[in-house]
Length: 499
Image (tube, rainbow, N blue to C red; front, top):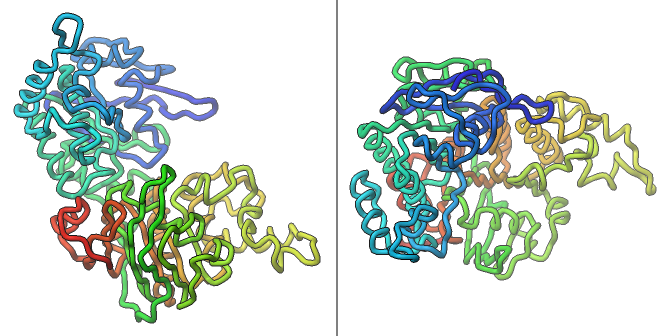
């Protein structure tokens, strides 16, 4: 790809980007959320058209106007969110749109045979007769890869492929990728996980603010240099965790049952306990009840069965505002819709939960100056940029929005903090800051429930780790647990027990 530029209104998502990919190579594409990685790959796959620039495949200039053009050029893409049809079998999904025919109907026997041959050739173990709805996430990903190989892809683009995998599934995926490149295929791996790229790629191209910053040889770099190239400054990747004095239980749940939006049991009998001065991490593959658990504990989702206690008080039937008044802070996983009102100013968002309390109001009157003054102090303390209380929340970057949510939630000196995906979609520098804040709260005796899909984050911050699978806590381990132990728990391959 040479000189590729793509704009969306005033935003230049890609600005003169050039990258090269060799035959039989794994190229890492690294950058923060919003850096332009996915946009670039969607251009390569024909989902977007570039404003400027050229694409060359095997030395020939390629006009790629849609995914059909990309497929004809041997380019396949596995998206972060899969596109499989759950009701169909593996074989039916793989051949969909390019079905072998027997007369006017699908030749199912041929589809199964072709799937078995592809699966065996590349070590992508999967049952061609199984329905996709019955497969694990890792197995579904193999089906997506097989779909591209069935269409004879020679260039494979993987967008955040390990985001929903257990450690074992990640190892299996990387083994498959090595088999593919050994067979002459080329792979572009999009991710924000530095360690993974260092372990699998040969070269890494770093994109920042829509531009290529540098391409480095993997053997000659490390996580520190990659982080610096990503954000433009030195970053402390791991915050030191000191010993903290553990106190009495401050947040407890007993036999929680919570329903999903579709009415199924998303949380199925969970019991847990978080004590003052500790961080309890909840690890698990996405979609196993984490969202519903956080919302039920915070009081924003109804509880069907079970009890919730704050500092020993039963708050099961107390709403979110009441729990907040009793010292619970909640950092929701979706800051854009559940954490902030994007069209409100930062001062309005800061006072969103306390606008009817002193010093922001009295005798029915609201005092905007007091709101702005208090917000400005907190925004500076939490390094929100710009620290302007009149700035619209939607104008801030993801990292600064998240810090604004933390500034509001922690300003009331809560005793219990529920942090759901606190660093999702934020830059490395903001991650460092958020981790420091959580550990500081821990050292001050606060009880913190950390729910995160980032396994390394859970390990580095938590004192204990409870693993959630299919709405249940299936085991509890320490932060020094092996990848194998955690992976087995995350896959639900052990007996279940409550934490």
